[in-house]
Amino acid sequence: MLKDLFGGKSKYVTVERKRRSEEKEKEADDKKEMPDDLWTKCKSCKQIIFNKKLAESLKVCPECGTYFRLTATERLSLLVDDDKFEEYDADLQAKNPLDFPDYEQKIDKYQDKTGLREAVITGIGEINGWQVSLAVIDSRFLMGSMNSVVGEKITRAIERALKRDLPLVIVSGGGGGARMYEGMLSLMQMAKTSAALKRLDQVGGLFISVLTDPTYGGISASFASLGDINLAEPQAKIGFAGPRVIKQTINRDLPDGFQTSEFLLEHGMIDKVVERADLKNLITRIIDIHNLRGEKKNGTE
Amino acid sequence: MVQNNLDFEQPLIELEEKITELTKFMEERDINLTDEIKRLETRADKLREEIYSQLEPWQILKIARHVERPTTMDYINLICDDFIELHGDRNFGDDQALIGGIGKINNLPVTIVGHQKGKETKDNIKRNFGMAHPEGYRKALRLMKQAEKFKRPIIALVNTPGAYPGISAEERGQAEAIAKNMMEMTGIEVPIIVVVTGEGGSGGALGIGVGDRVFMLEYTYYSVCSPEACAAILWKDSDKAKTAAKALRLTAKDLLELGVIDDIIAEPPGGAHKDYKRSADLLKERLTQEINQLQDLETAELIENRYNKFRTMGYIKREVEEKMDESIESCG
Ligand SMILES: [Zn+2]
Image (tube, rainbow over all chains, first blue to last red; front, side, top):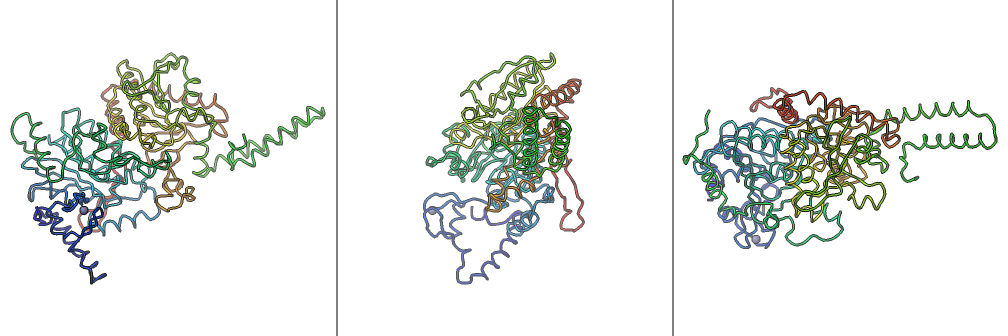
């Protein structure tokens, strides 16, 4: 699995990996005595874990079982068969339609930091041989928030599933919800993606929504909640309003485990909580059950 | 009622007070001050026009939030010949912050849903300040589906600071309720007209905000988040809410320019709260006009147009590979 996560076999992973290693070198120069690309301290149990070991455990703390967030690339490596991912719409970038102060600089900064152009990667990949239209949100990019580009790319991923008769899998992890910097244009992406999902729904398309840490606001209140099957990773924080806002509004402490995957499962909002190591297999089984023709579909075109 | 005054109206209020005083004085002393009063009234009209023609976004926001602003029920009472409120989502309860029902406008059957605010504290608590729970959104969807069955056009009146951020709302799936409404509203086979009549607070507004026409009254706002929250998050300073109100482009004029809404419905001078009847008349006139137009469309065309309206929202830039030749594309 180490190889799967960081082996960088697919072209796309390699590109990002190169950028990342350059970045790491720069960081290492900054603090020479601490080669922290070798280890990570678990936020939960405070144990020092070697990154090699952490990668082997798919970024789940081997000591205490705490889930670390995955980047979109890592998630794709986890889900997609080797080399079997073709990215689409990678050239779409944000404009600054409101002339919002500092927005361009913010975009530049996160592009440099993450090696991504926007907060979502979309394309067609193969999951255990099944062709799937995929969208994976990267929570590092402006908190994985949805702007015009993210909304457009996700809508196109939905339309791709519809046109080619493919299952749709969207992995959400956007704590930022609808992105403030594009104002109402961001909010309208909620309606846009939901409208596209209605069309997929009407033709009997399968949509598996995978909710990961953190999924909030305009993302949870649109496509992420609309799966035929909603899955969530353990311990993920998922909700509509952020915990701080709720606490301020009701003026009391929030119960333990509030807005976690387990909380959502208990309240009937998701179908299943699934361990990271089992996710690919579970998605495969769901797709398999939905394939009434009993054979693996090949995307046309 | 001093606390309800808008600070930027202060000069106007002083002038109006002076007119009242003079009128009283004239009656008491039996002196003819008609000319003087007329002169002041003309000045007041001019001043009102002046103030209202150059309102800052922050000031518009204050008018939109004004406690005396007509509520959804006020508009319903003034617009409908008959109206029956219908209650409950058939699952959990009846949300008092999002109401709905059936009625007639000029003899045309309609379904109306809308956020309901209160006017004084007690009423506002009952209405939860217009902040709906999931059962409110689910009730609205139930009534809209019912409208579809009986082929009644739907009117959605938006006036909420946002969907309620609370424990019970999260437990009952606030996010799913809003998402489901948007998804279903795109497919409902009768005309839907959305009008923001006060506050258009984010997802809470959009939860009943998908339609064939989306209008805003003149002094309302519609925003991805409240300017206060925006300022607190971006600049760690809620005092910068005025700056945020400007940056977010949340006024009716801004959103018409950005292509988010279809048109602006005028309000009487000084805002809807100054003249309920006139405000309702203006709204009614536009609603009947639009419903008539939309009812001429074939269902398939209606749904296709509605889909395209939202499908084309947003602005993106396409960069061809790593080259610098950028072609700007607005997706729509
Ligand atoms: Zn740990």
